[in-house]
Amino acid sequence: MKDLKQITVLGTGLLGGSITLTVMRSFPEVKAVGWSHRESTRQRARDEHIANEIVDDICESVREADIVIAATPICTFEGIFEEIARALPDGCIVTDVGSTKMMPGVWARQKLGANVHYVGSHPIAGSEQRGVEFARDDLFYSAACIITATEQSDGEAVKAMERFWSGLGCYVSFMTPQEHDRVFADISHLPHAMAAALINANDDETLKYAGKGFMDTSRIAGGPANIWSDVFLTNADNMAAGIERVIGELEKLKAAIGEADRSKLEKLLRQAKDKRTKLINYKMKKRELS
Amino acid sequence: MKDLKQITVLGTGLLGGSITLTVMRSFPEVKAVGWSHRESTRQRARDEHIANEIVDDICESVREADIVIAATPICTFEGIFEEIARALPDGCIVTDVGSTKMMPGVWARQKLGANVHYVGSHPIAGSEQRGVEFARDDLFYSAACIITATEQSDGEAVKAMERFWSGLGCYVSFMTPQEHDRVFADISHLPHAMAAALINANDDETLKYAGKGFMDTSRIAGGPANIWSDVFLTNADNMAAGIERVIGELEKLKAAIGEADRSKLEKLLRQAKDKRTKLINYKMKKRELS
Image (cartoon, each protein chain N blue to C red):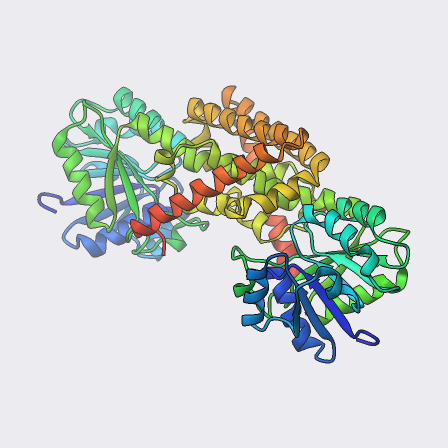
């Protein structure tokens, strides 16, 4: 990438470590720097050679960065932006990889100086594993990455971030932060809440009989509670609306069952089945499913 | 199996056809007879050689059967039991493979004569495919099969059904119909209702962004609407109770998000994660997951 000399990743977990690893391969002329809050994590990152350099001090780590990528839990961004604001060089691009995009944008406007550009990123990559030991240089291969920009965003910075994520192997698309958070509430955060609710609604003895259907339906509830709390809390209004809509749909099913209204019940179940079939056909066509 | 000369399967779909196929392999001395409502289905069953004989008339098909297995949609059982009652030979065992067990038991008591024995069966096998073309002789291999019996059940008939399903490759266990329907409402029928509600709560445009998590969470909503309507309608009270409990859990999450109560929210998500981890460990130990 032209003019890109250094990127700094704050938080060298699975995502952050995978970014530095992939940068070292895809942009070998760029210096990949990592920082992590804990000394033990920094040491593991050094042991795993996941970056060209692991720096102890957060401000030192960003002082010469062209792009700074926050890859820590969402609710730490506000403090991190405040802490690094005065150390960031002029023209630096700050981004983050949080799963919600409105609040990070708000914090960026409040805490970062006018001398830097903020652009939101959401690479749809990850795994159930956590920690730098699981970092891989193919985590972003063929992954979708949403870049969130507003009318206030710097056009050059947005283009630079598009080149960056594309270079890491992502398919990049664009949304406003509002649009992003509404869509991801519905197709990602809401399913997580439902998986958690399904498990919590059952006792351990009953769960022992769970089969493949239950395990699939509840799989995503295995994600880390603190990370998902951040996601839900920074997308509160959309989550509340989504949960309300799902409760409404559950009430419809319950009513049809209670009234023994086969035609109404079958219509609801057929609607779901048909929508899912349509979705699968769409995704097959787009080659998002094999 | 001692004394077993003929079994008759009513309904030669995926499940029914797989039963006759497996009987032909596991009990080669037993005559496997099939019947199906439609001539076209009977013809396909003959073309696929899934039984020793496919009989056109339902009463003729059961006249010499030692075991009759209803493998049609649950809500047809009542009519079928009524239709075959007078054709069944003395001492014949009637069973069914429906996913709910209380209503089939009620219909058996109402419609079948005192000269035959009813025992409920629920082999936990199937696939997203339907129809005799997908029948396989390994569908029951290592599958769980719940036999439902009450204090009124004939002990010998229950033992015969245990030998039958074991011979087909199932791990057999026992429950009362009440216990069965409560447990399966919670771990099978309720997840299906939630998957349908999740899809119906979202519009097609939003669904296009669905990722792996969403696809997993909603997978079971791809099942046939008429079959699942039967399941829900014959398990109405348990379904209503399950939906209420899930709505209660969703309300708890919504409240914690609305109040920005991180500690409450994280506790709920951690509870779900921990219960699921415990469940996975249990299933690994029981070798039900690999």
